[in-house]
Image 1: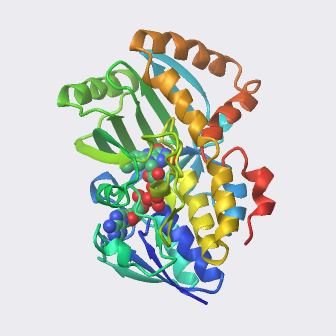
Image 2: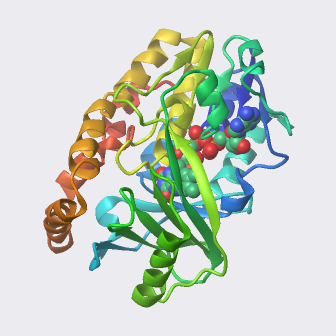
Length: 362
Ligand SMILES: Cc1cc2nc3c(=O)[nH]c(=O)nc-3n(C[C@H](O)[C@H](O)[C@H](O)COP(=O)(O)OP(=O)(O)OC[C@H]3O[C@@H](n4cnc5c(N)ncnc54)[C@H](O)[C@@H]3O)c2cc1C
């Protein structure tokens, strides 16, 4: 039995803490805020991710599903102004509630960790000086904290944009926008009475861009948010070899470890899986490293695909690339399910978890 410190009570940290405690270790989680649920201005939120909750739940050792994770029934995409729509089941798309409300995934994981005897120290923050002083085998799962990327010299890319949150009783849905005002995208999602909007890009964005999207939200979908908050963050997608599992004698987890999809930046699936693998590293470094490599082997290829298809082409080329692809997907979702799932292999473990789950110990 070891004394394990987990830094960060997000999806990866909580999953890691739960697993370590289940495996017989004494675990304490240090969280910078005085609450579960992350950055106050962007929560409560609805994150969208492809996921097979039953399979992932079996791997991490807890039931995943409603009310925290709900299938997104309708998916619409605007590609440079043209609207496409299909059912979310073709993508196994889930709406995940985040934040500190009772039905959020963060609160669910927190409760599961408490049931296993995990202790929490809220309001406890590590910084670039104190990180080296953490005990060996500490698990660092600090998500998008910029200072720590610099401290560990992990290559990262800045993102800028706006978030908005509101309320609505509509059934879970998601709408995405690809347009000439961002090299990334914007999305709107709703679930459990919460609505959420995020517009982002890898260069600083001004109010006029946000106003353009706000106008589209209203005119195209009748959606209105009462206030917006600027968002600035950091993501570990700068180089094709970004994922990193160890730093000295510490274990990295979640987005901080680069367990993220470098194309659309889906991070929820990778965070949960990565929390589990990080906990396994406490008892078996080499075995956990093999699993980490297996589930991030996609990264360099999808990183290159993103560069060539989404980042480099000018907007008119992107438009003419994306429209036919999305048009086919709208027309033949069932027939194209296999290739869509293959493309979603950029999400750590999404496509391969069923195949490899027997290799992952409890
Ligand atoms: C606005 C926004 C929208 C997103 N939308 C989606 C989406 O739709 N789909 C999707 O799949 N992913 C989405 N993501 C990404 C997803 O949220 C992350 O990938 C996921 O939360 C990563 O989990 P994590 O455990 O690594 O980090 P987090 O869940 O961010 O948790 C990190 C925790 O560490 C704590 N912490 C940070 N620094 C310190 C410190 N120095 N000391 C102590 N504690 C610290 C934080 O307070 C937090 O509780 C989005 C991210 C953002 C910012």
